[in-house]
Image (cartoon, rainbow, N blue to C red; front, top):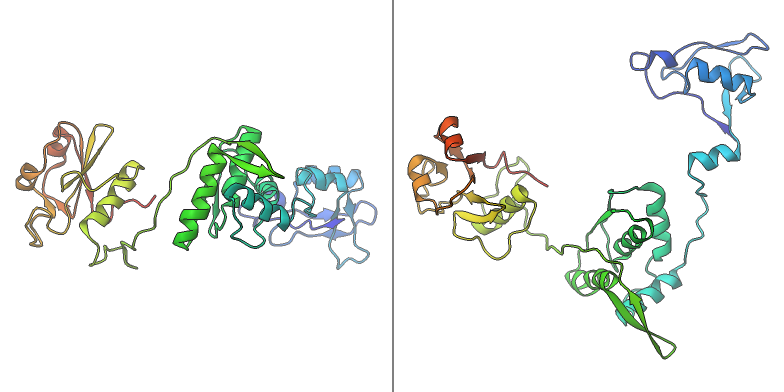
Amino acid sequence: MSDNLVGLATIDRRPNLHYDLINPETGDVYPPSDKGWRYSQETMQQKIAEGRILWPAKKTGRPRHKKFSADLQNEFAGYSSFLDSGNTNEGTEEVSRIMGRERFIFPKPRSLIQSLVQQVTEDRDIILDSFAGTGTTAHAVMALNKAEGTNRQFIQVEIEPEIAQTITRERIKRAIEGYRWNYRGEERDEPGLGGGFRYCRLGPTLFDADGQIRGDVSYEELARHVFFSETGEPLTGTPAQPPLVGLHKGSGVYLLFNGVLGDERPDGGNLLTRQVLAQLPAHDGPKVIYAEGCTLSADYLTRHQINFRQTPYQIRVR
């Protein structure tokens, strides 16, 4: 095939790719485009010597790169643009086998998704499927991890609560743990792929377009988000003892918000002062305290093992 030789960088970024290309047989000179050439002069000379440059018939034309099928095989790791992995019947049969019922028409075949994921991802990549449905993508990722000994991860999003709970979640769970199915009257056991996942329900939007906490956000809603953004772990149950949200690896996570201490003045209970600090539920260890502001000095915070985080600006979004 004939391929483009135009580069991808301006002269200030890659000056070594901006040079005149000369046809050694005719002496015709072809200046570089604004993006230069794709290869350095040394590589280009090697390709000229190998007969890998296609020279135009006219001076107004542009040289191009001659590529062979072997080049394409190496460039795309041997993957063809023709996909012959699976069919919709395969997807329907697998969902029916795992779930013991048919709920979806023509779900994607797992072998197809597994092939696509294998082509474009590698170990520890995260694969997002915003239309999870029957959970085919998650199943494909786990099967690929099992086959290759990798640790790819997945995020599945399903907008229909019933489907998310009874189909998507359940299929992933059974794929991990294994399941029993009936084949022409004979009971068979399908071994599990191993691994695990976390099932979450999407809560209300906490921040407005300007990054400020919305006025109708409850203490518990923000507390759950703060705890997760700080620790990477979801809060189990309700906040421990507000404003103490919970403990994680020896640290106490606190949130001063919405007058949780009973003082709703603008400069009251949402501000970390010595008086407010004295009212906090005791914790013998490091503290991470989220509040609108702080009157304590950096030295005081350090001596008392306090990490102050200003809301909403230092609430991370994981």
